[in-house]
Image (cartoon, rainbow, N blue to C red):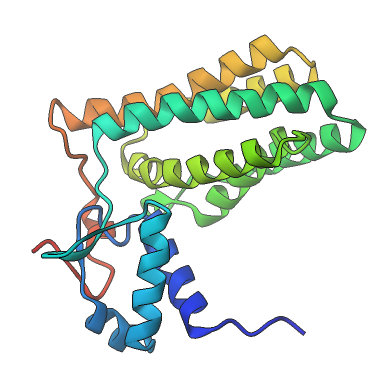
Amino acid sequence: MPRKLSLTEQAYRRLHDDLLTCRLAPGAKINIKEVAQSRGFSLGAVREALSRLSSEGFVVFDESRGFRAAPLTVEDLVDLVAVRADIEGQCLRNAIASGDLTWESGIASAAHRLSRTPVHKDGGLNEDYAAAHAEFHAALVAACDSPWLLRLRQWLYAQSERYRYLTAPIMPHDRDLVAEHAELAEATLARDADRAVAALGRHLQKTAGILAEQAQGHAALQVPERADARVLGASRG
């Protein structure tokens, strides 16, 4: 029988999902009382969940302004992509050096699923695609034998997802994500570490470039209106 989640864990998972998908807009003030009332959680459960999310970098806290969704900026994006490319590149090299046939099969399966899953749905990022994309990137590094590198990679990946959700409505029609992922999988399965790490870096930089261009010289990144308005208990004030 599945373990019953505590109210704090339920609140954490709900808020984490809203932050990850930008349904809770970057920079938005989080009204603890309204979140608790609208979602059926206790005030204590929401506070504990927000404290945990703050330690993970998804929420920021200020004594005078309370909790807010962490902002998304071009400066932060550039730094995040550079660090993620470094850490995930190390994981990938490690996995290529130690991966076995089971690891190879996992990559092939995840790549096939990703290639058959539509990116968009209802004008935004398809949730099934998001899951398939996470599975693919995890499969690439699954054979890495450093738990700390994998933990860092997972945290950086989650932070990157907040930015990637913003690209869905503005994704260039000529961007071939299937080809990008196929090149990454092919190089990895060929055990060509240099080529695989280079392909990973290009893949990450393209998403960053789309958002940087959208910002058009402004520090703050724009959030699609449809995502900004869907969470109760959040405001720009």
